[in-house]
Length: 415
Length: 117
Image (cartoon, rainbow over the protein chains, first blue to last red):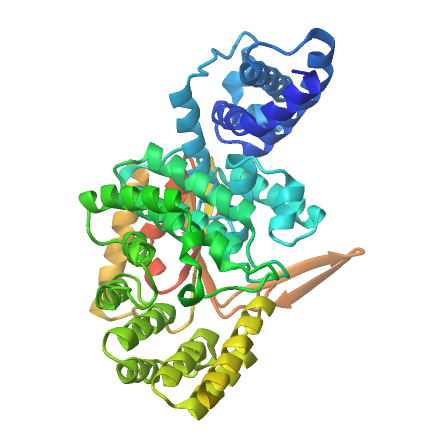
């Protein structure tokens, strides 16, 4: 392989591991670690071209980055005060613990550090993509529809806070673990939904973010296999992602679950998701991601929308409402109840929700009401609810889908 | 690593002086101070007169003294601690133990170079 090709491959495959190792060595100073890892790649561009590609590029890069870190620490009084034992002892050498398990442990520590609650929510997602997933700044900027310079500033500010406030590079101790793990899972979940729902912009689904989120969920499930919710999240992402190809038409418009061509669903992802879910359910029953994954599994295994087990789905939404109540959960429960018990029962649940004026501004409430009224035979009411939903929609693809359903409902009424 | 822990509260919140709740909270402050000393985490701490704030600015040799805090806030800064802690999680663990965390806000700031007498 050419030096340039090897460098590119190392950047993609080994950068996150090198960064995690150096960050641990630097007692969690991610700002300095990012700088010296970057320096190491610059050095590699020259050296590998001149002397050939080393046998173990990752180890070469780690050693090079560590030497550069030592150089900087010796010249930097402030940093030296933080890590005096490193700066004072010039013989301090890195013994290369480049085995797989310690690399993954370091990446887990990195994930907890990047998802620390003392960092702003957007910074957590951006840092995780940069320092754990290894995406470049331009890639992250594109994913969040931000400018490169704004994204770079956000990352620099977050790294400074990690160093200045001393956000620790570690897997949290037991008394913090449950809460912190929930925060990490939330970041991974939001990365997925950012790709899957794409709240902004012209493209309704951004597959690169979905793939990164699934990769991170796999890493977590491998490293914390006894935490039921890490398995629950991985199962949920796999089962949701299995439908990705069926969710968007060639023209970019979204296809709702009831209209999807189930032959396009990814059977491999469904199988894997169901297996991971079964492992999670052996550990514990409750848990928001586990219940959501179970709902996704019931849909994934139903031959058609009409043949879906709506009683089970409405029961699962009732369970989810207990664990993690939100208007969207109640709306989904009302839709399921509308199939299990009839549209009037679903509409009654929605009326209860719509009494809150804040929730009455929420588009999915009106979209669900429109569908239920249509099925109840109330055509005028359905049309009015579609109009409300369209007026409240913030996304082009979503608005187009609602308009199409409104036309279909009106045409169905005339027919 | 040292952290400044600043304690704010919205006026009217928290237990009122002369009530059993107030006495109970005073006991909790005493226990917290003892725990900080025992852990070797206490550097210095003090209460502050909440309503006697003066702001000073020096502009081109003119000293301007004005009444009140620099920023208009609804919350009052009434006390501070300087604690020694290995990392932010340890500092926020102390901050969470402050009795006023239940009705006010507790701000944690990493310090750079504490000067001593």
